[in-house]
Amino acid sequence: MNKQIAFLGLGVMGGYMAANLARGGYSVKAWNRTPYRPGVEVAANGGANVVLSIREAVETADIIFSCVGDVPDIEEVILGTGGVTAFAKPGALVIDTSTIGPDAARKIGSELKKHNLRFLDAPISGGDIGAKNGTLTIMVGGEPTDFEESKPVLEVLGKTIRLCGPVGSGQAVKLCNQVLCALHMVGLCEAMQLAEQQGIDPNLVVEVCSTGAAGSWALSNLGPKIIESDFRPAFMIKHILKDLRLVQESLQASSQELPGVEMSDRLFKIVKELDDGMGGEQGTQAMIRAYREQTPPL
Image (cartoon, rainbow, N blue to C red; front, side, top):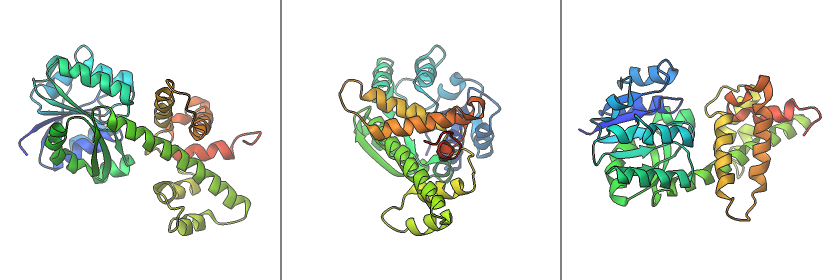
C-alpha cells in the first residue's frame, strides 16, 4: 500500500480511476493536459493531488498510469519531450489504460525498456459507470511478474482483470471487445426501430429481451437511454470511431474483411457529422440518430 502512484489523463474515465486509487489508500499525484475539466475535479475530490506537470506527477512514482485519447497523445505523454521517459525513476512500472492497438503498445513497450522502465498495456472496458464503481474489465499485456505486482492496484479499479499475454495482447483483446460493442449497438438500434414500426413499447423490448439470449450490457444500460433520447456520453462516438480505425488498421496486412465493423463505422460517422460536425461528442447510443434522422432512410 506504500507505492506512490502517478495518474496521467483525467477524462471521463481517468478522473474516477485516480479518485478510486486515492480512496483505496494510495498516494496519487494526478495530471491532465487541460487543468479545468470535470475529471480533474473528480480526482481532486477523491483525494488525488492534482499537479501541474508530468514531471511533478511521475518523478517519485513507483507505478505510472496513463489514460488518454489516441496513439499520438500517448506517445507524446510517455515518449515525448517532457514526458514520462524524461522524468520517471528507473524501474518504474508504466501502465497504459488507453486503447491504442497492439502495434503502438509494442512500440511504447520497446522504447520504455530502453529507458529502464517496465510496461503493461492494460486497456479498460466498462464505461464511466465501471470507472466510477471500480468494476472495470482490464485486459493486460506484459510480463507475468509485472502483472502480479500490479494486481493489488488494478483490483481497486476493476472487477475482471486478466493477463492476456505479452505486451500488445491486452490491446488485441480490447479491439475484439470494441468490435462487440459496435455491433451490439447496431443490433440495439435496429431492435428499437423494429419495435417502433411494430407499435411495440421499446421499454418492453428492454425489459423482456434483457432476460433471454438477446440480453447484453448495451441493451440493459443503453437501451433506456435511446428510448429517452439521452445521448450524453459515457463513451463518445469519436472514441469508438478511433477504436474501429485501429481494428481496420490491424487488418491491413491480411485479406480479412469484417463487414459488421465497416457497417458500424459508417453509421457512427453519419452521426458524427450531425450538429454541424459535433455529433461525435455524443455517446455511442446516439447511433440511433443515423436511423431516425437520415433522409433518405438508410
